[in-house]
Image (cartoon, rainbow, N blue to C red; front, side, top):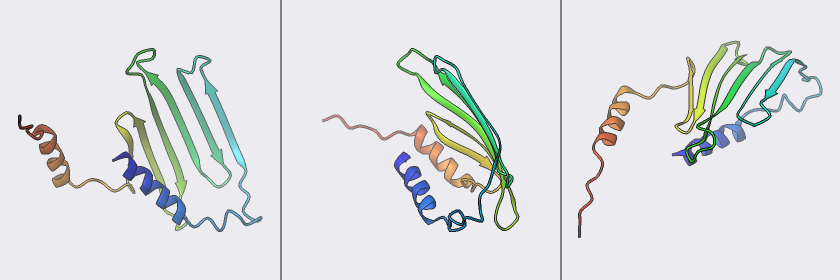
Length: 130
């Protein structure tokens, strides 16, 4: 499943129209930028804002540090205006459960698929003993 998500992100990145970025007329200043990190690496946060209205903020923390179950949890939000003028805003959590974006433009999983996944999870395959 994680491979499919990574593949989808790669395909989206590879097919994105970034021709305007290479133009010398399209230099966007960074209006605000901050980064903080605990010296022990247990947490971090960063934020930035660009001259063309992109705003992003992220916070990360290590859950269950110094255990075998240690994991990184990152929460953040992004806001920008799409090329067609549509305002886009989404929040996300990325943790051991995967990347979980929430926003009006993010496709939602149909209820029927969610119910099917719940059924499959609650009815694991039976292992036949030889």
